[in-house]
Image (cartoon, rainbow, N blue to C red; front, top):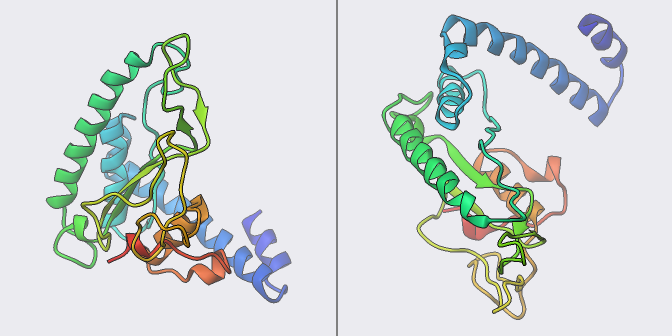
Length: 217
């Protein structure tokens, strides 16, 4: 089926051919990933947050993967009794701390340590209301936040702004601070900044979207 797909699409010109070729290369990498995971015994690690991170780090160390999506365990969508999240946060930050230690002690592909090559983005697809509801929980909220850690990130600070009701305010994309003449920060602005951090050309993937330059050193 892969061969048939290649024969049918290689004659197509332009961006369609580029995307088809990228799909074929991804399929090849997927097969290699499965083989390497078996060879390294990574399947025995389980599916905890730390185990997922170690698997991803190993694939990056071997140079056969540049990105990974890791699921954070737990039922975070709590519309009632928000106190259940306390233990989940403790588990999450504990595993994240261990993963950072692992990256700081794992040789990188191009640098001494993998921590000097990797960017970690911790986020959800939506936020939670600033106040608890009648059931002691929090509902869905259109404004969200992300924690970005790693190589090339201008870290140690908050970027963006909200008013007293936690509604987003326009910011200067260069400085990251609130500005009446600025723009509203959207997920695509963060996305193209992450593409730049990864050494990719955002214009080829999301043309015309301004990156959040304040995030990048």
